[in-house]
Length: 462
Image (cartoon, rainbow, N blue to C red; front, side, top):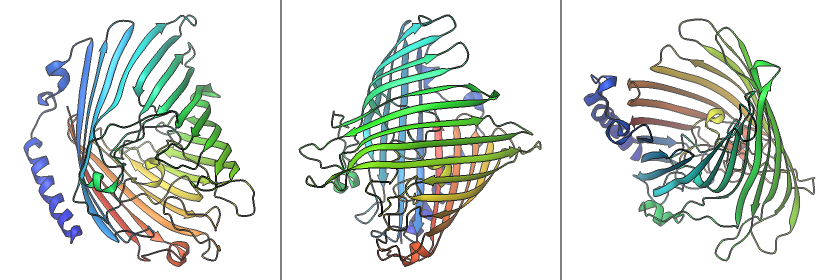
Protein backbone atom coordinates (compact mmCIF):
# COMPACT_ATOMS: atom_id res chain seq x y z
CA UNK A 1 0.00 0.00 0.00
CA UNK A 2 1.13 3.58 -0.59
CA UNK A 3 1.11 4.27 3.14
CA UNK A 4 3.77 1.60 3.67
CA UNK A 5 5.84 2.93 0.78
CA UNK A 6 5.91 6.42 2.22
CA UNK A 7 7.03 5.16 5.64
CA UNK A 8 9.90 3.33 3.99
CA UNK A 9 10.76 6.42 1.95
CA UNK A 10 10.77 8.56 5.10
CA UNK A 11 13.22 6.26 6.84
CA UNK A 12 15.55 6.10 3.85
CA UNK A 13 15.39 9.83 3.21
CA UNK A 14 16.07 10.67 6.84
CA UNK A 15 19.20 8.56 6.89
CA UNK A 16 20.38 9.72 3.46
CA UNK A 17 19.72 13.40 4.09
CA UNK A 18 20.80 13.80 7.70
CA UNK A 19 23.83 11.50 7.69
CA UNK A 20 26.25 13.43 5.45
CA UNK A 21 25.59 16.73 7.28
CA UNK A 22 25.28 15.63 10.89
CA UNK A 23 28.89 16.61 11.66
CA UNK A 24 29.03 19.65 9.37
CA UNK A 25 29.88 23.08 10.71
CA UNK A 26 27.81 26.17 10.00
CA UNK A 27 30.72 28.06 8.45
CA UNK A 28 31.46 25.19 6.07
CA UNK A 29 27.99 25.17 4.51
CA UNK A 30 28.03 26.02 0.80
CA UNK A 31 26.06 29.01 -0.48
CA UNK A 32 25.35 30.70 -3.78
CA UNK A 33 26.19 34.06 -2.23
CA UNK A 34 29.71 32.96 -1.29
CA UNK A 35 30.25 31.54 -4.77
CA UNK A 36 28.58 34.08 -7.06
CA UNK A 37 27.44 36.99 -4.92
CA UNK A 38 28.85 40.43 -4.18
CA UNK A 39 27.84 43.59 -2.34
CA UNK A 40 25.63 44.51 -5.29
CA UNK A 41 24.48 41.05 -6.32
CA UNK A 42 22.52 38.95 -3.82
CA UNK A 43 21.63 35.34 -4.58
CA UNK A 44 20.31 32.49 -2.48
CA UNK A 45 18.29 29.32 -2.87
CA UNK A 46 16.54 26.49 -1.10
CA UNK A 47 15.58 22.91 -1.89
CA UNK A 48 12.78 21.17 0.00
CA UNK A 49 11.98 17.47 -0.03
CA UNK A 50 8.58 16.52 1.39
CA UNK A 51 7.07 13.14 2.23
CA UNK A 52 3.41 13.22 3.28
CA UNK A 53 0.49 10.86 3.61
CA UNK A 54 -3.03 10.55 5.00
CA UNK A 55 -5.83 8.08 5.65
CA UNK A 56 -9.50 8.62 6.41
CA UNK A 57 -10.64 10.98 3.64
CA UNK A 58 -12.51 14.18 4.50
CA UNK A 59 -13.58 14.83 0.89
CA UNK A 60 -16.68 13.53 -0.89
CA UNK A 61 -14.66 11.63 -3.51
CA UNK A 62 -11.17 10.48 -4.38
CA UNK A 63 -8.67 8.36 -2.50
CA UNK A 64 -9.46 7.39 1.09
CA UNK A 65 -5.73 7.08 1.80
CA UNK A 66 -2.78 8.36 -0.19
CA UNK A 67 0.80 9.57 -0.10
CA UNK A 68 2.93 12.00 -2.06
CA UNK A 69 6.57 12.89 -2.52
CA UNK A 70 7.20 16.47 -3.60
CA UNK A 71 10.18 18.72 -4.28
CA UNK A 72 10.44 22.50 -4.36
CA UNK A 73 13.45 24.46 -5.57
CA UNK A 74 13.65 28.25 -5.22
CA UNK A 75 16.45 30.46 -6.58
CA UNK A 76 16.29 34.17 -5.65
CA UNK A 77 18.56 36.79 -7.18
CA UNK A 78 18.70 40.58 -7.03
CA UNK A 79 21.12 43.13 -8.47
CA UNK A 80 21.38 46.58 -6.92
CA UNK A 81 22.31 49.14 -9.56
CA UNK A 82 21.98 52.14 -7.30
CA UNK A 83 18.58 53.73 -7.75
CA UNK A 84 17.23 50.56 -9.37
CA UNK A 85 17.11 46.93 -8.27
CA UNK A 86 16.52 44.05 -10.67
CA UNK A 87 15.35 40.77 -9.19
CA UNK A 88 13.73 37.45 -9.85
CA UNK A 89 12.77 34.08 -8.39
CA UNK A 90 12.84 30.79 -10.23
CA UNK A 91 10.48 28.19 -8.78
CA UNK A 92 10.39 24.51 -9.68
CA UNK A 93 7.71 22.46 -7.89
CA UNK A 94 7.18 18.76 -8.64
CA UNK A 95 5.25 15.83 -7.17
CA UNK A 96 5.68 12.07 -7.48
CA UNK A 97 4.02 8.85 -6.29
CA UNK A 98 0.61 10.23 -7.37
CA UNK A 99 -2.08 8.45 -9.36
CA UNK A 100 -5.46 9.34 -10.85
CA UNK A 101 -7.18 9.22 -7.42
CA UNK A 102 -4.63 11.44 -5.71
CA UNK A 103 -6.08 14.91 -4.96
CA UNK A 104 -3.23 16.51 -6.90
CA UNK A 105 -3.52 20.16 -7.94
CA UNK A 106 -1.49 23.22 -8.91
CA UNK A 107 -0.88 23.64 -5.18
CA UNK A 108 1.86 21.02 -5.62
CA UNK A 109 2.98 21.17 -9.26
CA UNK A 110 4.29 24.21 -11.11
CA UNK A 111 7.52 23.33 -12.84
CA UNK A 112 10.24 25.72 -13.96
CA UNK A 113 8.25 28.90 -13.36
CA UNK A 114 9.58 32.46 -13.11
CA UNK A 115 7.63 33.38 -9.99
CA UNK A 116 9.24 36.82 -9.79
CA UNK A 117 10.85 39.07 -12.41
CA UNK A 118 10.75 42.71 -11.34
CA UNK A 119 12.47 46.08 -11.33
CA UNK A 120 12.29 48.37 -8.31
CA UNK A 121 12.97 52.10 -8.45
CA UNK A 122 14.19 53.62 -5.19
CA UNK A 123 12.82 57.17 -4.90
CA UNK A 124 14.37 57.97 -1.53
CA UNK A 125 12.86 60.63 0.73
CA UNK A 126 11.11 62.68 -1.94
CA UNK A 127 7.88 62.37 0.11
CA UNK A 128 9.49 63.99 3.15
CA UNK A 129 12.47 63.81 5.48
CA UNK A 130 12.90 60.41 7.06
CA UNK A 131 10.65 58.68 4.53
CA UNK A 132 11.44 56.22 1.76
CA UNK A 133 9.47 55.26 -1.35
CA UNK A 134 9.86 52.42 -3.83
CA UNK A 135 8.03 51.58 -7.06
CA UNK A 136 8.06 47.98 -8.30
CA UNK A 137 6.90 46.71 -11.69
CA UNK A 138 6.82 43.20 -13.16
CA UNK A 139 6.16 39.86 -11.49
CA UNK A 140 6.44 39.81 -7.70
CA UNK A 141 5.09 38.21 -4.54
CA UNK A 142 3.27 40.01 -1.72
CA UNK A 143 2.86 39.37 2.00
CA UNK A 144 0.46 41.88 3.52
CA UNK A 145 -0.36 42.13 7.22
CA UNK A 146 -1.46 38.89 8.85
CA UNK A 147 -1.28 37.13 5.44
CA UNK A 148 -4.87 35.96 5.89
CA UNK A 149 -5.96 37.60 2.62
CA UNK A 150 -2.80 38.32 0.62
CA UNK A 151 0.40 36.28 0.81
CA UNK A 152 2.65 33.75 -0.85
CA UNK A 153 2.47 30.40 0.95
CA UNK A 154 5.40 28.84 2.74
CA UNK A 155 4.00 25.39 3.43
CA UNK A 156 2.27 24.88 0.09
CA UNK A 157 4.55 23.65 -2.68
CA UNK A 158 3.75 26.51 -5.09
CA UNK A 159 3.64 30.27 -4.61
CA UNK A 160 1.24 33.12 -5.36
CA UNK A 161 2.70 35.49 -7.92
CA UNK A 162 1.29 38.79 -9.17
CA UNK A 163 2.10 40.77 -12.31
CA UNK A 164 1.62 44.51 -12.14
CA UNK A 165 2.79 47.58 -10.24
CA UNK A 166 3.28 48.24 -6.54
CA UNK A 167 4.27 51.30 -4.50
CA UNK A 168 5.76 50.98 -1.00
CA UNK A 169 6.20 53.94 1.36
CA UNK A 170 7.75 54.04 4.83
CA UNK A 171 7.23 57.03 7.10
CA UNK A 172 9.53 58.58 9.67
CA UNK A 173 7.31 57.24 12.47
CA UNK A 174 7.39 53.59 11.36
CA UNK A 175 4.25 53.98 9.25
CA UNK A 176 3.97 51.82 6.13
CA UNK A 177 1.76 52.14 3.07
CA UNK A 178 1.45 49.84 0.04
CA UNK A 179 -0.74 50.32 -3.02
CA UNK A 180 -0.90 47.81 -5.88
CA UNK A 181 -2.68 46.87 -9.09
CA UNK A 182 -1.96 43.36 -10.34
CA UNK A 183 -2.98 40.49 -12.56
CA UNK A 184 -2.58 37.34 -10.41
CA UNK A 185 -0.65 34.51 -12.03
CA UNK A 186 -2.94 31.62 -12.88
CA UNK A 187 -0.88 28.46 -12.43
CA UNK A 188 -0.52 26.17 -15.44
CA UNK A 189 -0.88 23.44 -16.44
CA UNK A 190 -4.06 22.57 -14.54
CA UNK A 191 -5.22 19.31 -16.21
CA UNK A 192 -4.76 16.28 -13.95
CA UNK A 193 -2.90 14.28 -16.60
CA UNK A 194 -0.40 17.11 -17.11
CA UNK A 195 0.12 17.54 -13.37
CA UNK A 196 0.80 13.83 -12.98
CA UNK A 197 3.52 14.12 -15.64
CA UNK A 198 5.00 17.31 -14.08
CA UNK A 199 4.65 19.08 -17.41
CA UNK A 200 5.92 22.63 -17.84
CA UNK A 201 3.70 25.47 -19.02
CA UNK A 202 4.19 29.19 -18.45
CA UNK A 203 1.67 30.64 -15.98
CA UNK A 204 -0.75 33.11 -17.47
CA UNK A 205 -2.05 36.46 -16.37
CA UNK A 206 -4.77 38.51 -18.00
CA UNK A 207 -7.35 41.20 -17.38
CA UNK A 208 -9.95 38.50 -16.74
CA UNK A 209 -8.54 38.37 -13.16
CA UNK A 210 -7.43 41.54 -11.38
CA UNK A 211 -6.36 42.07 -7.77
CA UNK A 212 -5.76 45.57 -6.46
CA UNK A 213 -5.84 47.55 -3.25
CA UNK A 214 -4.03 49.43 -0.51
CA UNK A 215 -2.58 48.58 2.89
CA UNK A 216 -1.53 50.90 5.75
CA UNK A 217 0.06 50.21 9.14
CA UNK A 218 1.25 52.43 11.99
CA UNK A 219 2.19 52.19 15.67
CA UNK A 220 -0.83 52.40 17.97
CA UNK A 221 -1.60 52.61 21.71
CA UNK A 222 2.02 51.89 22.73
CA UNK A 223 5.36 50.93 21.20
CA UNK A 224 4.41 47.21 21.17
CA UNK A 225 1.15 47.67 19.27
CA UNK A 226 0.40 48.17 15.58
CA UNK A 227 -2.81 48.99 13.75
CA UNK A 228 -3.46 48.04 10.12
CA UNK A 229 -6.11 49.22 7.67
CA UNK A 230 -6.63 47.73 4.22
CA UNK A 231 -8.92 47.69 1.22
CA UNK A 232 -8.69 44.96 -1.45
CA UNK A 233 -10.51 44.59 -4.74
CA UNK A 234 -10.91 41.44 -6.86
CA UNK A 235 -12.43 41.45 -10.36
CA UNK A 236 -12.96 38.19 -12.22
CA UNK A 237 -14.59 37.63 -15.61
CA UNK A 238 -15.15 34.73 -17.97
CA UNK A 239 -12.86 34.12 -20.89
CA UNK A 240 -13.49 31.96 -23.93
CA UNK A 241 -11.90 28.83 -22.45
CA UNK A 242 -12.80 29.30 -18.78
CA UNK A 243 -16.12 29.89 -17.04
CA UNK A 244 -16.01 31.60 -13.63
CA UNK A 245 -18.30 32.87 -10.88
CA UNK A 246 -17.63 36.42 -12.12
CA UNK A 247 -16.51 37.61 -8.71
CA UNK A 248 -16.41 41.37 -8.15
CA UNK A 249 -15.45 41.76 -4.51
CA UNK A 250 -14.47 44.68 -2.29
CA UNK A 251 -12.91 43.77 1.06
CA UNK A 252 -12.18 46.49 3.65
CA UNK A 253 -10.63 45.36 6.92
CA UNK A 254 -8.66 46.29 10.02
CA UNK A 255 -6.26 44.61 12.41
CA UNK A 256 -4.63 45.55 15.70
CA UNK A 257 -1.97 43.44 17.38
CA UNK A 258 0.88 43.60 19.88
CA UNK A 259 4.34 42.10 19.66
CA UNK A 260 5.08 38.95 21.62
CA UNK A 261 7.62 39.12 24.47
CA UNK A 262 8.91 37.07 27.38
CA UNK A 263 6.79 37.61 30.47
CA UNK A 264 4.19 39.60 28.51
CA UNK A 265 0.64 39.20 27.26
CA UNK A 266 0.04 39.70 23.54
CA UNK A 267 -3.10 40.04 21.45
CA UNK A 268 -4.41 40.18 17.90
CA UNK A 269 -7.83 41.16 16.56
CA UNK A 270 -8.75 41.36 12.88
CA UNK A 271 -12.00 41.83 11.04
CA UNK A 272 -12.94 42.20 7.38
CA UNK A 273 -16.19 42.69 5.49
CA UNK A 274 -16.84 41.71 1.90
CA UNK A 275 -19.26 43.28 -0.53
CA UNK A 276 -19.75 43.32 -4.30
CA UNK A 277 -21.48 40.76 -6.52
CA UNK A 278 -21.03 37.18 -7.72
CA UNK A 279 -22.81 34.69 -9.97
CA UNK A 280 -24.65 31.86 -8.23
CA UNK A 281 -22.67 29.39 -10.39
CA UNK A 282 -20.17 29.46 -13.25
CA UNK A 283 -22.96 28.97 -15.82
CA UNK A 284 -23.21 31.93 -18.17
CA UNK A 285 -26.94 32.29 -17.53
CA UNK A 286 -26.64 32.13 -13.73
CA UNK A 287 -27.95 35.23 -11.96
CA UNK A 288 -25.59 37.76 -10.39
CA UNK A 289 -26.31 38.41 -6.70
CA UNK A 290 -24.99 40.85 -4.12
CA UNK A 291 -22.29 39.79 -1.66
CA UNK A 292 -22.36 40.42 2.08
CA UNK A 293 -19.80 38.36 4.02
CA UNK A 294 -17.41 38.84 6.92
CA UNK A 295 -14.60 37.29 8.95
CA UNK A 296 -13.28 37.88 12.48
CA UNK A 297 -10.07 36.54 14.02
CA UNK A 298 -8.91 36.92 17.61
CA UNK A 299 -5.96 35.66 19.64
CA UNK A 300 -4.72 36.34 23.16
CA UNK A 301 -1.46 34.81 24.39
CA UNK A 302 1.15 34.88 27.13
CA UNK A 303 4.85 33.96 26.96
CA UNK A 304 6.33 32.55 30.15
CA UNK A 305 9.81 33.55 31.32
CA UNK A 306 11.46 30.12 31.37
CA UNK A 307 14.24 28.45 29.41
CA UNK A 308 11.98 26.97 26.72
CA UNK A 309 10.02 30.24 26.27
CA UNK A 310 6.58 28.58 26.30
CA UNK A 311 3.66 30.57 24.93
CA UNK A 312 0.01 29.67 25.47
CA UNK A 313 -2.68 31.30 23.34
CA UNK A 314 -6.45 31.15 23.00
CA UNK A 315 -7.69 31.63 19.43
CA UNK A 316 -11.07 32.13 17.82
CA UNK A 317 -12.26 32.64 14.25
CA UNK A 318 -15.50 33.21 12.38
CA UNK A 319 -15.92 33.26 8.61
CA UNK A 320 -19.45 33.57 7.33
CA UNK A 321 -21.26 30.92 5.32
CA UNK A 322 -24.06 31.34 2.82
CA UNK A 323 -27.39 31.92 4.55
CA UNK A 324 -30.28 30.29 2.63
CA UNK A 325 -32.70 32.89 4.02
CA UNK A 326 -30.70 35.81 2.61
CA UNK A 327 -30.94 37.13 -0.93
CA UNK A 328 -27.21 37.98 -0.74
CA UNK A 329 -24.26 35.63 -1.10
CA UNK A 330 -22.67 35.33 2.36
CA UNK A 331 -19.74 32.90 2.01
CA UNK A 332 -16.47 34.68 2.76
CA UNK A 333 -13.76 34.56 0.06
CA UNK A 334 -10.16 34.33 1.34
CA UNK A 335 -8.75 35.91 -1.85
CA UNK A 336 -5.01 35.03 -1.86
CA UNK A 337 -4.55 34.35 1.84
CA UNK A 338 -2.84 31.46 3.61
CA UNK A 339 -4.17 29.28 6.46
CA UNK A 340 -1.20 27.27 7.70
CA UNK A 341 -0.76 29.26 10.93
CA UNK A 342 -4.32 28.73 12.14
CA UNK A 343 -5.65 25.47 10.71
CA UNK A 344 -2.73 23.21 10.07
CA UNK A 345 -0.89 21.93 7.00
CA UNK A 346 -2.47 22.99 3.72
CA UNK A 347 -1.49 20.92 0.69
CA UNK A 348 -3.22 18.93 -2.01
CA UNK A 349 -3.53 15.97 0.38
CA UNK A 350 -4.64 17.82 3.51
CA UNK A 351 -6.22 21.09 4.59
CA UNK A 352 -9.90 20.59 5.47
CA UNK A 353 -10.21 23.81 7.48
CA UNK A 354 -10.24 27.26 5.92
CA UNK A 355 -11.68 30.74 6.31
CA UNK A 356 -15.04 29.81 4.73
CA UNK A 357 -18.25 28.90 6.61
CA UNK A 358 -16.51 28.16 9.89
CA UNK A 359 -16.57 28.97 13.60
CA UNK A 360 -13.46 27.97 15.46
CA UNK A 361 -12.25 27.95 19.06
CA UNK A 362 -8.81 26.65 19.96
CA UNK A 363 -5.73 26.66 22.14
CA UNK A 364 -2.07 26.67 21.06
CA UNK A 365 1.09 25.85 22.99
CA UNK A 366 4.42 26.96 21.49
CA UNK A 367 7.96 26.42 22.71
CA UNK A 368 11.47 27.36 21.61
CA UNK A 369 14.17 25.91 23.84
CA UNK A 370 17.00 27.04 21.54
CA UNK A 371 17.77 28.79 18.28
CA UNK A 372 17.86 25.40 16.58
CA UNK A 373 14.63 23.88 17.93
CA UNK A 374 11.02 25.06 18.06
CA UNK A 375 7.59 23.52 17.92
CA UNK A 376 3.94 23.76 18.85
CA UNK A 377 0.82 21.75 19.66
CA UNK A 378 -2.66 23.08 18.93
CA UNK A 379 -6.22 21.87 19.33
CA UNK A 380 -9.32 23.31 17.67
CA UNK A 381 -13.03 22.64 17.76
CA UNK A 382 -14.80 23.81 14.61
CA UNK A 383 -18.43 24.33 13.66
CA UNK A 384 -20.25 25.42 10.51
CA UNK A 385 -21.39 29.01 10.49
CA UNK A 386 -24.34 27.99 8.27
CA UNK A 387 -25.58 24.38 8.41
CA UNK A 388 -26.71 24.31 4.77
CA UNK A 389 -23.51 25.62 3.18
CA UNK A 390 -20.39 23.66 2.22
CA UNK A 391 -18.09 23.26 5.24
CA UNK A 392 -14.76 25.11 5.00
CA UNK A 393 -12.51 23.40 2.39
CA UNK A 394 -14.02 19.92 2.62
CA UNK A 395 -16.61 20.20 -0.16
CA UNK A 396 -19.08 18.42 2.16
CA UNK A 397 -22.58 19.90 2.24
CA UNK A 398 -26.02 19.05 3.54
CA UNK A 399 -28.46 21.38 1.79
CA UNK A 400 -31.21 20.30 4.20
CA UNK A 401 -29.23 21.30 7.29
CA UNK A 402 -30.16 18.02 9.01
CA UNK A 403 -26.55 16.98 9.72
CA UNK A 404 -26.02 19.66 12.34
CA UNK A 405 -23.28 22.23 12.67
CA UNK A 406 -20.45 20.46 14.54
CA UNK A 407 -17.64 19.84 12.07
CA UNK A 408 -14.72 18.30 13.95
CA UNK A 409 -11.97 18.52 16.52
CA UNK A 410 -8.48 18.86 15.09
CA UNK A 411 -5.20 18.32 16.94
CA UNK A 412 -1.95 19.34 15.26
CA UNK A 413 1.73 19.17 16.22
CA UNK A 414 4.93 20.40 14.62
CA UNK A 415 8.65 20.21 15.43
CA UNK A 416 11.46 21.98 13.56
CA UNK A 417 15.18 21.45 14.09
CA UNK A 418 18.23 22.97 12.42
CA UNK A 419 20.52 20.00 11.82
CA UNK A 420 23.10 22.43 10.47
CA UNK A 421 22.23 26.04 11.39
CA UNK A 422 21.18 28.18 8.41
CA UNK A 423 21.79 25.26 6.05
CA UNK A 424 19.91 22.03 6.78
CA UNK A 425 16.57 21.97 8.62
CA UNK A 426 14.07 19.21 9.36
CA UNK A 427 10.36 19.97 9.82
CA UNK A 428 8.10 17.15 10.99
CA UNK A 429 4.41 17.40 11.82
CA UNK A 430 0.95 16.01 11.52
CA UNK A 431 -2.71 16.37 12.39
CA UNK A 432 -5.69 14.28 13.42
CA UNK A 433 -9.14 15.38 12.29
CA UNK A 434 -11.61 13.81 14.71
CA UNK A 435 -14.81 14.08 12.68
CA UNK A 436 -17.92 15.46 14.27
CA UNK A 437 -21.55 14.75 13.49
CA UNK A 438 -21.57 16.81 10.29
CA UNK A 439 -18.58 15.06 8.67
CA UNK A 440 -20.08 11.70 9.60
CA UNK A 441 -23.75 12.26 8.77
CA UNK A 442 -23.79 14.60 5.75
CA UNK A 443 -25.17 12.89 2.63
CA UNK A 444 -22.05 13.15 0.44
CA UNK A 445 -19.38 11.91 2.86
CA UNK A 446 -17.46 8.90 1.57
CA UNK A 447 -15.49 7.96 4.69
CA UNK A 448 -16.62 8.43 8.31
CA UNK A 449 -13.31 7.39 9.92
CA UNK A 450 -11.07 10.08 11.36
CA UNK A 451 -8.41 11.66 9.14
CA UNK A 452 -4.74 11.17 10.03
CA UNK A 453 -2.08 13.19 8.24
CA UNK A 454 1.70 13.38 8.61
CA UNK A 455 4.64 14.95 6.79
CA UNK A 456 8.41 15.26 6.97
CA UNK A 457 10.24 18.13 5.26
CA UNK A 458 13.96 18.54 4.71
CA UNK A 459 15.16 22.02 3.74
CA UNK A 460 18.58 22.74 2.29
CA UNK A 461 19.37 26.47 2.17
CA UNK A 462 22.22 27.54 -0.05
